Length: 216
Length: 256
Image (cartoon, rainbow over all chains, first blue to last red; front, side, top):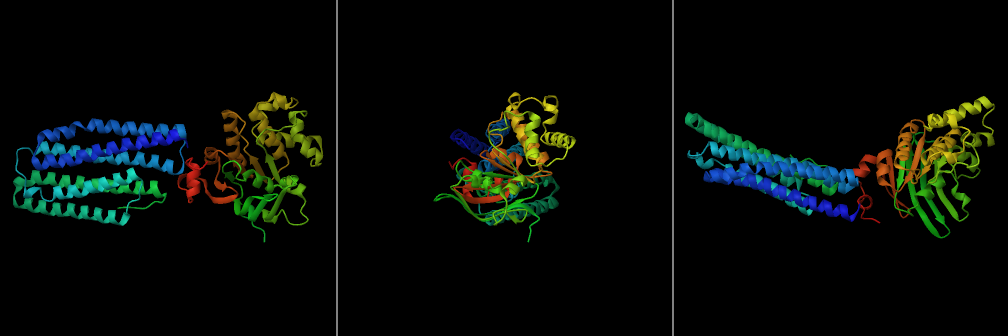
């Protein structure tokens, strides 16, 4: 494959990294907005959803053009396949950030319950997984599947623990049902973000090694 | 024991020109009724290997073959094997379409049959020629031009005429050495489509320096590099996730 192709592929990878920063930034900002009940920051997250969708479309189009023009093979093809998949995961992660930001606006003006249960901690864990997956993509290094699986298991446990805790609050006081239902939803979004990070890790490992492995 | 599964098998195949070893200890199996592509950079030995499969390589006095090549289980380099018989079983198509310019379309396809006295009557000859032209997807285009000369055909049509000439001899294997290298894209497409049809009845070995073509038309691929068979496998697997770093480098253009 020509040098021109590899240069362009490298530029496209840069764009994926930018999209990754945008998506993970939306997620972490939404949690900050939730913690601080910062409506302005929540609005800023919501306003980024169009940019995220544009990047998703733009990168997809460029990747498809690459296939049409250069008929890449082997690792080059796996890289493009990986890009096409991970932009979808990133778009979803960013949209979960937007969904959390919408919740921030709905819950504005009401005090948090139980210090937001374990949501900030859980978010931190999900963000780390996304960050590590993106770093592996950038450096083209394989991800330790076992370690990733146990991190995902931890997220699942956290979601369940938040669910149980919220149930207790709701049983104690029906006034808390609305807020706690939102918390349960947010925990579910964060768990899904972890799942997307795992799928990204699978695709990145395939890109790097040519071998399929399941991470879930 | 005869192998029924493979059309061609090589065992510790070595080929050299003088002191220069160009094929090194190659063990390879080509399944029946499939398209097998041999790919690799220029000078890797793929055409040499193809020419060894029908023993036209020995027309070059410098070439020396050792090891075994088995066609349908029979070692074609065993003592006493008549190379002419081997060549009847293996039709060959070259890079440049080479119909006989002084013979008509009809005569081009008929020549092998006549020389080998393989048909008994004019009717049988005509039937066989129509059959071969149809198999080569050329009959509809030349039906009214059987008495014309090949110079009036396009490059792609000439190449299909050569394929018809090979098919008329009813070979079991078709060896193709970069058959579309000098054909325009439309002609190339027709020949590639033809391969899909032909593999129902024949085993096709295609030498190509174009990985995209190998990817499009073959079922299995062998990658040769400097005389070594680096990797053999199913086409989809090789082009998506080859087992060898060298194949990966070749397919991504890092190997010149």
